[in-house]
Image (tube, rainbow, N blue to C red; front, side):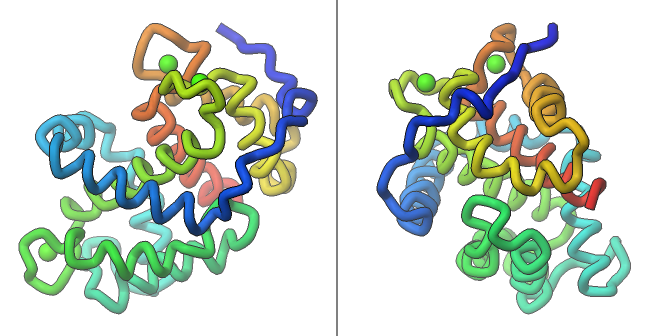
Length: 213
Ligand SMILES: [Ca+2]
Ligand SMILES: [Ca+2]
Ligand SMILES: [Ca+2]
């Protein structure tokens, strides 16, 4: 199904006044509470994700840090990964300036077994948690009617914030977003994104940035 996106014309509504850092911090807390209550459900979600979805950021970080892909990330490297991603994509991405802070805050939890390094398996959950936080952030900005799904109109607000970068990497940003939208569908309702689908959308989006930049 091809969704007729003309989102740029739909994005006249203003996002909430809350500054991005506050939205991000709130989302971090909300996702943390969710994970505390629902870890088996979340773990199952991550374990069922195609691992190829989670490899590009891992590989990006290793490339930036100039280390082999099979090397686990020590604390400094782990935070450096977030900083590198923020530096690379900077202001073009909602809350990207906070990636270094996020990775710093995530370190203790990301290194599950406290062996002083985040290995690939630990990384998969870490990136998924980051995507979940971004999903929550997106909902904080965009779910105007608070029904826990984003329709095209709501998502359009967010799209306008992203479109500057998309225009650099895609000749047809609306089609690219459309493709990401459809690739991220997990349920029968392709007209909306639920929170899991929005998390997956972010993962696909990051991979697109890496692959197309
Ligand atoms: Ca570890
Ligand atoms: Ca909604
Ligand atoms: Ca859906």
